[in-house]
Length: 257
Image (tube, rainbow, N blue to C red; front, top):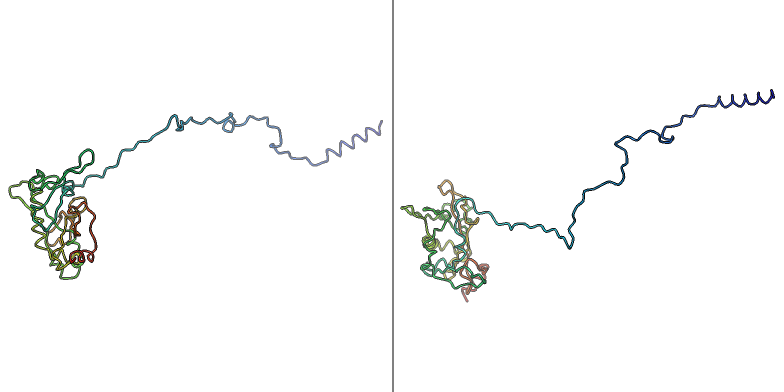
């Protein structure tokens, strides 16, 4: 009996002499409440979104984008684009196209001289004084060489002393007179000097008809309305609506033929 007790005490002493083990708390069963921020509450709830289906399509309508009107005074493009105008022919030969009918049929043109549009102001708002230039002539590369700039034609000025607005009829008459006075320059711009038989048509306005800043401020030119012209091939559309412009070589052959 005594021996057995001694053996038991020796075993206990040997166990107590072993190094103590450090057990990390993560290896212990979790008996401490999990912090609220980490608490699991089941399946996450997401907001219900109505997705488009065949029975319930979602359609987004957008308004058509219309270009903003030009800032400040501008020429009436809605009138000028309807003119059938050979610029070196008498203004009495100018015709104006009528607006298309509701079914899309183009109505016959009418002489501008007898059309009520001839007395309509050429600008919005109406102006009693306007300054005009031909963009093809104004921007010709020839003027970039030294003293030749002094030979560039001055802008055309149309002014009514009584304060009445400049009309469409005045515009076409004064532009015709102005362009006839610089016809040789217009021909040379297109490489057609000496080709007097080539017809030119009015080819629209610059910057949606708004006033443009031009060179030569030392001359007091300031801002002007600018328009373009172009040669017309034989049998082409005499209005600014056609697309019959060709290069100078083809125009010369057409004229000589």
